[in-house]
Structures are given as C-alpha cells and as structure tokens.
Image (cartoon, rainbow, N blue to C red; front, side, top):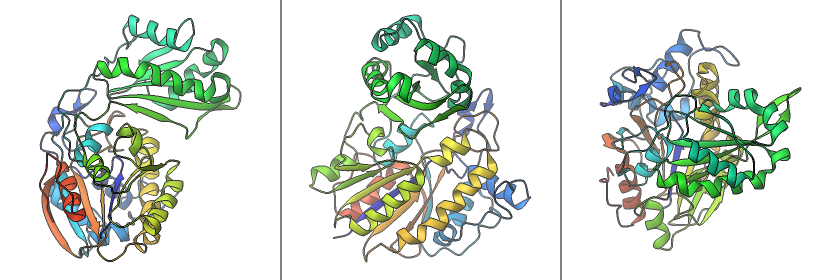
Length: 403
C-alpha cells in the first residue's frame, strides 16, 4: 500500500494570484507580489549576500519542477531555477477568502473556508474593552498590555520590562485573523500562558477569529528578550471533515509534523511532533523511514514565514530555502516504491514587498514518486483530492484529483 507525504513550505508562494488586487499590505494591493521570483532575482543581482552568496541554489526542488512551477504561476522565469522537471509539477490557486495559515492548510486538506474571518482594526487600542477585561479576568491580573497591531519581536522588546514588573499579559494582533498573547516562560509561567490562551479561545472563535496564539519568551530587559519554540496555536476547529479526518476514519496513521495538529485542532491526527525547523526535518526523515503503509504525513516548515518573510529579510529567506533544499535528499532517500511526496505552500510572504503581512499568491506544487508529470494549474483542494486518490481513500467534498 502506498504512503503520502504533504510538506508545506510556509509562505513560499510563486505569484500570479488572479485576485491579488483584493488583498492588501496596508493600502498597497498584493498585485505583483511573488515570493520565490523576487528572492531569486535579488540573489542573482547580489542583493542577498548576508550569510550566503550568488544565485539562489535549489537543485533538488528545481530538479523536481520548482522553476517550471514558478513560470506556470506567473509567466516569468526565476533566475537560476530552470531545470527540466523530473518530478510532478504545477501551480495551485486558492479560493478561500484569506491569505492566512488556517485558510491555506484547510483548503489544501480539502476544505475551503466557508466564511469571512474577523480581523481587528489597525488602531490603538485594537481590541474592544470588554474583550480585554475578559482576558485580564482569565489571567487573574488587573489589566493587559500593548493592545495593538505589532510583530512579535518588537512588541516583546517594547513591553517585556513592563510585563515583568506588572505580570500582565502582552496582547497584540496582526493583519491575520489572530489574537496573540505573549508572556515570560518563567516569570508568568508556560503552563499558565497556555491555560490562558485555551480559556479565551472559545470567545475569540465565536467571533470568527481564526487563532489564539501563545507566544512565550525568555530573557531580561538587560540581556534582551527571545521568543522560544513553545508557541501553541488554539485554532477554530474545521467545520467539516478534512483529508486528515477521512484518513484517520479509514484506520490510517496520520502523522502531523510542526504546527499541523494545532491548525486542525488535533482533528484527524494520530501522532504529532513539533520543534524548530531543523528538528522538524529530522522528524520528517524519521517518518520517511517509519511511517506505515497507507499513512499520511502532513508537515509544516514555518520558519520561512515566521523568521524571514514577516521581517522582510530577503537573504535570510534565501538561506532558509537553500538549507531546506540541501536537507531534502536524506528525506527523499526514504521514499519507497509507490510513495508520493508533494511540496507546496499555504500562501505567500514576499520579503521584498511593502508591509509585514502575508501576500496573496499562487503556490508551487512539486512532487517526487510518480516520475515527470505536468499537472498544470490546479486548486488547493485538488491537492487533497489527489492525495486521497493516491491513498485509495474517499475524496473530500472539494477538489478534483490531478493524478
């Protein structure tokens, strides 16, 4: 019996979204955003030399068909990515009304988002007073801090000292449909932070806010503050079955690597592994060795997005891509005859773009295990339908197999 691996390179878009003009970074529409193309162009022009040098080097992914997928998505050749494909390749377009993590992952699993998410206004304060009183009550504190739109590292730098002095949680949001709470792992307590986020999540979910995210950090005002890897996302539960539910219901092993279990609220997952991306690659290789026949392994590598896309760090993003590509042979060597591994993304986050938000883009779909095969322009949900067909499972309600 065949196995399937779905690996999401978080935010690694390739431009060309037909509705990009409906999505914005501030007041600037995402029209023309293209994460992979613009990184490759910056590398070729010598504008991404911090910790690396020269054209973007992704021989494994490009060999499978990444360069061809970029060209299909946006009509432009990416410098240095022009190999003749030896794997499955195409480009996927999203229909869900969001450019966020749950929207992309749910649709890749066969469930386009059936509603509009709630976003908080980019004002100070960002949250209504009654919500903040509820959070403070759940935290057992007299108040909360920040109450603003912010990136995680700057908001902790700005409010970390006051958090240590008062014990009040730091609450902030972004252009995504999220409510984030940062707190010191030791002074506030990691378990207490997770309990707080779990307690407030149902109220936020009732408002159609996609995720409540625990953002623990350590450090002091003198030495600086550092976020830890003990983040936890409390996401709305999918409103209908996904590919994960279908696979688990059929008695198959469903292995979640990275934040997949959080994104799906644990639904359809039989076992999970988390950590930084380097550790996740080890987990992926281990799954390649050990995952049973008929299983689905679903992985998310988040650091392209969290460490480099949102911070608009082009060289850092290029380094991460090259590290990922160099690590892939160890995983691909574990594939057995009949296995299928698909690499894709959930949205874009063009580090050359204005603002700090995700960008609305098509995403590449490249695969190993079925030989050279062009699948053309497909939908996100077609990924789920194709994996279901490969595994001999009933298809989710959306999508058509491209196999």
